[in-house]
Amino acid sequence: MLSNLAARDVETLIHPYTNLALVRETGPLVLERGHGVWVYDTDGRPYLEGMAGLWCTALGYSNEELVEAARDQMARLPFSHLFSGRSHDPAIELAETLKEIAPIPVSKVFFTSSGSEANDTQVKLTWYLNNALGRPRKKKIIAQRKGYHGVTVASASLTGLPANHADWDLPLPGFLHAACPHHYRGAEAGESEEAFSARLAAELDAFIQREDPDTVAAFIAEPVMGAGGAIVPPKGYFAAIQPVLARYDIRFIADEVICGFGRLGTWFGAEAMGVRPHSLSFAKAVTSAYMPLGGVTVEEPLYQAMLDESRKIGTFGHGTTYSGHPVACAVAIKALEIYRRDRIVEGAAEKAPHFQRRLSALAEHPLVGEARGVGLIGGLEIVADKASKRQYDPKAGVAARCVAFAQGEGLIVRFLAGDRIALCPPLVIAPDEIDTLFDRLGRALDRTAEWIRQEGLQ
Ligand code: PMP
Image (cartoon, rainbow, N blue to C red; front, side, top):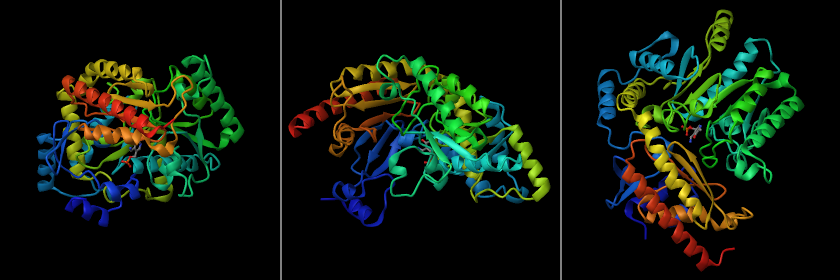
């Protein structure tokens, strides 16, 4: 029997990324409030938010300073836009701060309201750049299988997951996918991480040559893949592929939507993973998700091309009503101030070894084929047989069941395609809360193993 709110929910809402048939039976988990790393449902039950919402509430759920920043800006100038040369101080100050903390030279910043829009903008800017440079054939974009870049028509085309393509008539032509850099699944028997990286780089080179380098414009990658399963690239991966991209003058975009702002124990994932991109996409933790905000960095050559085009054709024809929304920018300024003042990024780096030790220990569990992570992000891969890495029938929904058991234990984690479970707690999680997270996850895995036995799953 669903509660009143739950019954109203299933009669009215389409839930993103949800099994719509299942949620009609189970009802949604209706959350009401949050404090620190905890969220509370309508019955007052607490859950440790082991996913920081959707990889985003880095500063937890009760940061009064962020609330104040929003309130002040709402009262002062709740809306203004950046079209037609208008501006406002929150957008200017935020762009200045982002230029300072970015790990690459940044000429300008363009704001969006989400990560999907940021990556959509990256696609458009890449096409725009090559038109401006008189290279109209150089338009294809290579992403990675299992990469996640969003859901707009272009960003879903970049995404390398079947659920975003099947039924949606995607990807669009000109969006290509290279191999997923996942050593556990992709390496040959006995192949070292370095050898696997070198092989992937050679394969990427051959792929670009087959496509014709004059038609390949950009490559996009997350420093660590999030929605694909918290996949950490093998040693030397980016060092191996970057010369290939440089050889063919391919714009390299790092999707920092999850990794940006401390997740890997560095300001940006690019620093932790040795990535040297031309441009970054960001969103999520830039405001600790208290307001929707994303954006892209624009490198000097691209800005010069934009200037030249503007002199020729006038208006730069891109932007949305909420690009640089003043309240979102004000919250982001405050969030970045807190990251710096309270050493949030350094704190994440200090807590990471403990988090990763507890994560690695789960690899001993009979159901866990691989436990992987870096910084304060982690992933588990559930297997039916550790030696062969064979998985359960996807229809059995083993990882989903484990996540439901975790919820029963008062822990929110996320299941991903391929019987994977992601962990991504707020960066402000305390060491004893890290222990609570893994104790509860361990119990959820035990209950899953028991359920598998009862069901007789093979
Ligand atoms: N890129 C990455 C790496 C992401 O994880 C996400 C969202 N999970 C996106 C882009 C899309 O962001 P949004 O959901 O804000 O559109």
